[in-house]
Length: 481
Image (cartoon, rainbow, N blue to C red; front, side, top):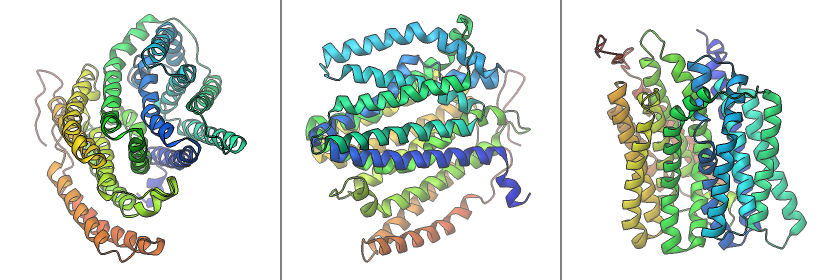
């Protein structure tokens, strides 16, 4: 098949659209962070860095995980998308409203937040837009998904910049910041509902099925959200919210790779996984090649961001000097998250989704243990190390649990060796870089690209076309072909 023919394949087109749209969203998110860095006080920026990452897990909680079941009911069960979305949106209204009420009472009376209404607006809007984004990607409707993703970030940035210009030099309040975010996602979510035209209906059987499939994944998402915040909570306790703000800037820099790889891959992979399970080899070749590709891309992009740190981070927050160790650990955490998705085949099967929560709980335990020991002593570097420790545990436990359900012979040792060699090459290039200006960084990136060009082919040598077969029942035994 010609290169042009390969590029025209729907799967490659879809992942390219996901990549471009999430890349644009990443740029817009960084611009939002720059505006907020200038518009908020240092203490409010630190509080924002603690609160903002919780919005998506809270939105998932308000939906009780039914958004995860849209892909399953549309792809595996073969139901029309408007019927699936209409039934789930209708059935979830009572539970979602009660959940929002509970969140509001807790934030008002337990945490005494003066911007509770803005919090509820944001969580509700995020829940709606999450449902619609999942609906679009469940059928491979990448263009509407991309339009929704980019539009929400662009509109939010425009509002932030406009209000900031109107109120400067008075700092913005956290309430106004979250109100603007909530208004953007709610309006665009309603526009997406109108475009999709779901068919409202009461189908409690479909809702129960969605809860049964999606609730364990919700627990996983929520627990991962806790894990993702653990290092920041410890740092806030021992270093203060201002230190959390600076630390979050390193996380935002590492999020460049998350937006470029983890999010597009996480959007593209679940539907593709269902499709390739029906391949002649039950998808084993596809899964192994996908994992290798993810590992190589993560290694390359991590090196690019790390080597260019002294240029990238000041673009987000002028005056901040990047910590090589902190950024390296943050990038390592993002890489671990990407690989945990790539290695997770068995735990996405119906009946096994609850095991994802256990994998995430192990990661939380590792993060808490490492943060409790490292942060009081080392501060921000300790928080970064604890994040990496949790990521490594997440990858290892997920791979083990998934293998027990669907034994696929991933080349784990080869991937680990690739990362070790890539890390050594990046360290040598960084230490021998004569300067940190734009042109020296460009030269270092050229050297890094050449080094990865030599490392990458080694990953593709002797990749077996078939691996272990899935054990579907007593009459089927796992074996190697």
